[in-house]
Image (cartoon, rainbow, N blue to C red; front, side, top):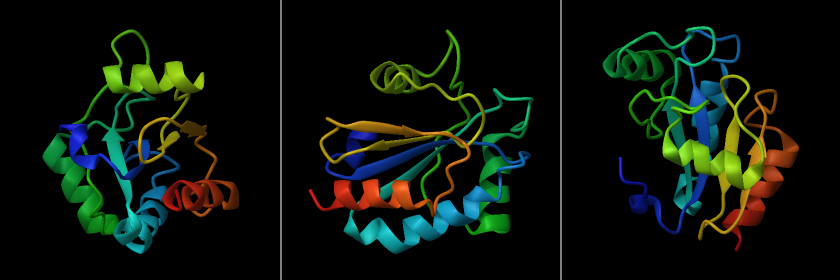
Length: 142
């Protein structure tokens, strides 16, 4: 998926998994996306099987699960690697910029509209976390 289509948008990039204790974050991510997409927020899911094999399905199985279980409409890329030497180059770069790499599923990177600022949030940061929401608002208002 060419990321240039999101130029000028605020991106919340999340590595996701369907069989994880944090999978319920899909619901909050979708609510956040639905509420703020018209202002320029794009939640972008990166399904990954990197952590304890918690995303074993095919791209279609993942999409069906997300849509049917959580009503997910935010964009999802194809299943990819987000950690280690074989990580997706985009994820490698996000880790280099922030000094923070995913240690588990639902790690989040927030990228401002022109890509000049990237902030990382760990798995425990829920989509309705006040610090995350404040940073999203800051990025949307610039």
